[in-house]
Length: 178
Image (cartoon, rainbow, N blue to C red):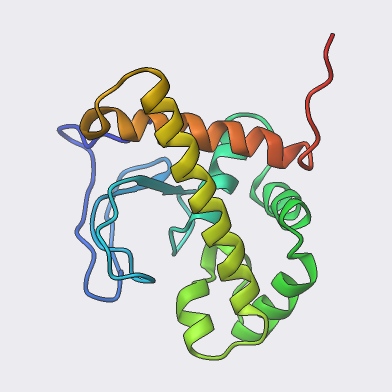
């Protein structure tokens, strides 16, 4: 999708804890705007998650992009590549076991870190690093195109997530020159 809510698309507004309920619709879950629950600051970007997810984070965005762009065969494959590339494989396993979540698609790193769940802070830190990188890349894209930050941020963030998803799927290795 394009990250823009069109007529006929399902939508919801989150509650104070970030909870949402979507009825109907299909495809990835897209979140724009609102307040970042980890900082309390306005969120002016875009995050996605596969349709079966119950949380939306920078990490679910990479999982969704890896699968959508053909860089992973499924969500589990994307999650394994993401954990390896960010160095959180062991921390993620510990955090998922301690929280009872089946995957990153159902793991809220902010909530679990506050609750003191073992290793959750490392998963949250990986998400923060991803989001900071996306913000920098998107700003560079908008600036290089001499674009308008108000209207061009969402497409730039989509491009940044796609580029990071491809690099993550490769394990951070640079593509080989032909």
